[in-house]
Length: 246
Image (cartoon, rainbow, N blue to C red):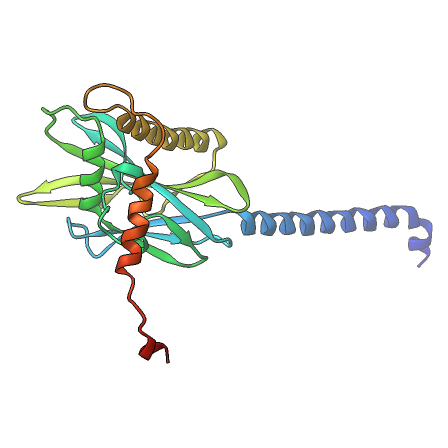
């Protein structure tokens, strides 16, 4: 006791230091847990085999729901990289005859997943959209990047997975280069991906606004077209007879 009384100042300082250290560790754990809850995580994986029948699956492993915007594709053809898109967007929709519920786009809750389609179909869509020379011969790899919006982030969030493409006879094999999805959280990279998505929309607008004769299309549509459509819809509606109403 006499030692504690004689060295009470040293003991008080030591207790304060230990208390401060405990609070720092506690605050660090709280900060890590807070950042983990706010951080989004997209999961891309291959399911149903690695051949042309294999599908690309998207899962939302974050704590917040999100809205899937697009699926970009980077194709390595004959040693050169070509930027493209593999999702339905505007006039370039590859699944134009499908129902909206079958689209790649749409909301995705926490721990939910979505089948994005066969990898071979997605690759075919990307090849149709990409500006690849006609004499190109071999697709060596494809990088899929999914873009989504979150309520907690103003910028698009993104996840990426790369597949090496192998040809075996009449079949193709798609082998992932990594086991986990690369989360693109860099601000500059996400802004670059947002610019790419904007370029796709601008390309669609330029392709549509330029008519076959080279003249630019004029803005506006004839009202008679809409009124004719409304009339047709009314004609197709089932008529309710008086007996049925009674």
